[in-house]
Length: 469
Ligand code: ATP
Ligand code: MG
Ligand code: MG
Ligand code: MG
Image 1 (tube, rainbow, N blue to C red):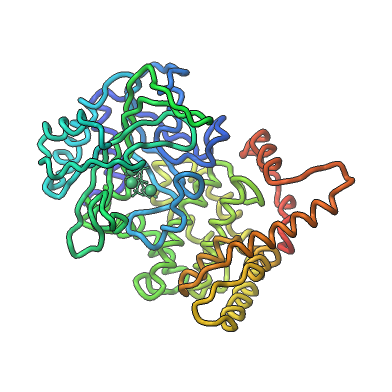
Image 2: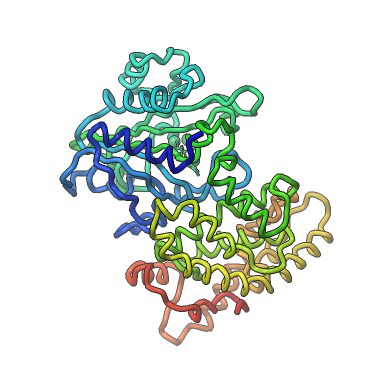
């Protein structure tokens, strides 16, 4: 059975054999791109190659790209733990053509690799095309996909965009049918969000550029950008349905089970899944220079860290846990990503410190949350005031509270939360008035952009969030 590490190599070797340059993953913090919080796909480092702004000494490339989807246009944070196929951190395998080959080659490449080299049963596969893309439809027919397995889709699912601006285009996607014992319908159906038909590969025909004012132009060159989730193809090739049952994710889940003495497949199963996922996103973000803070990228990191800590708490962990799992991750992924090995000590230290500090308020906050819930009538949402108090006094990011309530089938009155937040901001503004300094999130984010996320500002800068020490 191939490991995820083997599958990554098979993919890169296949495209190298077919004339592609193997290029390293770019960092999770995109260079010079304020439109994007984190690298969310393989094309990010090649953005300017598609628009023609940048020329390289190759026109075909292949990568295994580190991706984080925990904010912005592609946000999977709330899916983690609940679907079989989503992570906040994952590896996207891709092949790229910059004005070189187009649809006629890209589709047969993808088909050959998955049905021949990977040996996946073609009868289980179906594909989608953008509804007006007759050309892609015909190419799929030519490689041997029966017409009733090529679905035309009119929604944005088949028009790929990295974010609000940038190169984009119609796409064709390949899905695998895991069988009718699993809930979910084929793409385009009402229950497509189930996990029966899992999207494994997206092939984008890069031919447009989207601008901020909403306009779009046709690019001079026709290019290819593809993305296949390593964990998804890995699950398939390891005979599993669920990404979290692959060798790599399983070893992290077992490390979590070991550190918390909680059964990996028992009632705490979801907690282990979230911990395994968040361990990867937090560790890779720190390795790429992001540090927990109260704004911008650092705040997204802090939110993910705190969510993970709550899940560890739910498993009964009394002491910090996350930092103990880093060595298991380095064992699995350190060879493919040496920056992870280099940053191991920093990751462990950062996790331990953050967890030690959050632990006290976490315990108290969760107790307050339980008290509030016990007073609430059945089915009623948590008042915004309470969620705000958890945020302001106990350092609970709103999404952490929402995540905690989800397990109990409850939600937050976000309207009330925002009102309480606005009120506090107004008070803060009033007390700043006269000092001549206008401080708000946007400005902080801009400063951080300019200073660069790699600069370590020290832990003392993090005291703005209520009474967190
Ligand atoms: P889905 O519809 O399942 O959420 P997507 O259409 O958002 O996937 P793309 O933006 O097309 O995904 O990304 C290309 C590929 O990356 C997908 O086909 C999938 O294999 C993989 N992928 C996307 N999001 C995730 C994720 N959160 N975790 C793991 N793999 C992912
Ligand atoms: Mg998605
Ligand atoms: Mg999709
Ligand atoms: Mg897709």
